[in-house]
Image (cartoon, rainbow, N blue to C red):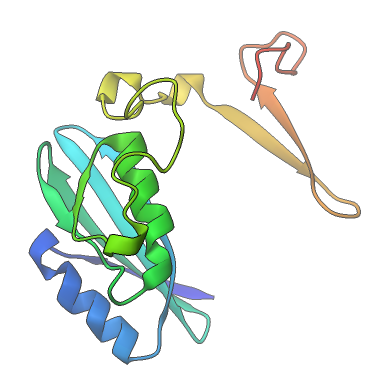
Length: 153
């Protein structure tokens, strides 16, 4: 499988997504992450085992257009991003816009603040073992015996 990353401006998103739709691509995922001063969004599309990733950066307080008019099922990712990050996604299709209530969260927009984001030193390694199905064991670097010591994963 091959892939290509394409840096775009936020206002170019609808046009690029429409082009991918017209060319027969399918939307694979929408990823959001916090970066200094804002958010980085990656929209991944597949056609014939080739992945195209549209990447854009939004400053704090900005908004991005929904792609649900072209890929209806994008509502899941868009509502998730809105709920977890507090990012304003404009014009999500009316029948699937949960308006901040897609998830029942103990804390509103828990990943909105950059300082709350997990840092590399807090990350843990996932060791995938072979066999029937997938057995994943989480291993924290800070655990003396290589286990998560009940910290939860």
